[in-house]
Length: 115
Length: 115
Image 1 (tube, chains in turn green, purple):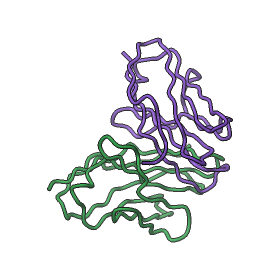
Image 2: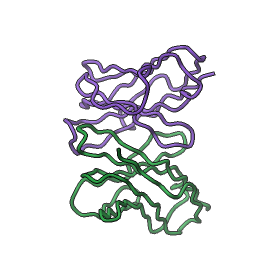
Image 3: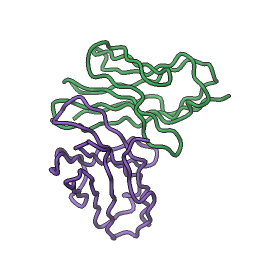
């Protein structure tokens, strides 16, 4: 079975700092990879996704992520964070060999941006 | 807004009772997945319905059951509620065959509290 690890449970940054959130997954087959964000009181929103092709994917709000297959990683980055980026961030993987769109999520990283 | 609506938004039940949660999928979507998100955790996959048939199930007991209707809306039923069932229940819809490259759109969830 696949699993997802997010090593940073709570990250606190000042505005304009650079961000990198780690995500590693365990599954040897083909995967689709996602980062979701959950703002306080709001639904999960897709930040970006990787299906195939260029391993560097760009998403909304200036976020990007790089898929490194050899490291089973899909880290999220943003060069300069804003106070409005305060939220919970979830990495998720869909293992394509199971014939459904089951998403396996990490435990999430709570990001707090200090103005 | 994702077009995925869930009802009710909040619910309080007593241990041993039964509960039904509802989800209307985004227009045109044929697949609905249900997730349980306990406090401080990532969403956990309960099951998925594709064209009214269960298409994958997570590690949840049989007292968690579901339905999908011809209009692709869905219900999650939980019997014999336990205190540990207290969580945010998320519905996600997508347009999929089996294992295709799709993204899931989440509703705002139903907060279930079991007392």
